[in-house]
Length: 85
Image 1 (cartoon, rainbow, N blue to C red):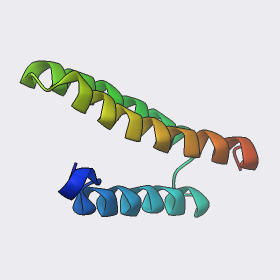
Image 2: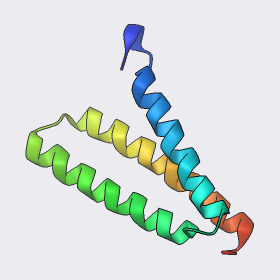
Image 3: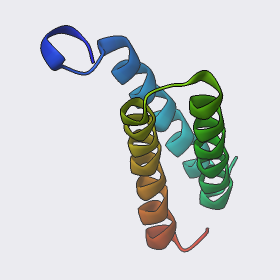
């Protein structure tokens, strides 16, 4: 968390930028929603492994996994609405 318990501005901006880029890549047909879902799942596995190997707190790991889950949900919704163009 950043100042006064608010989310970190740099991290928040970076996350929004990356998620927007991922949606643009899907919309342009360069990646499929399935590609993105697979990538997010791999990122979650890597996050768990890194958290364990570095002794990161469970709370911090869960926060990161929650952000990845939110991205995943946006692509599940996208996938359901587009029926895998």
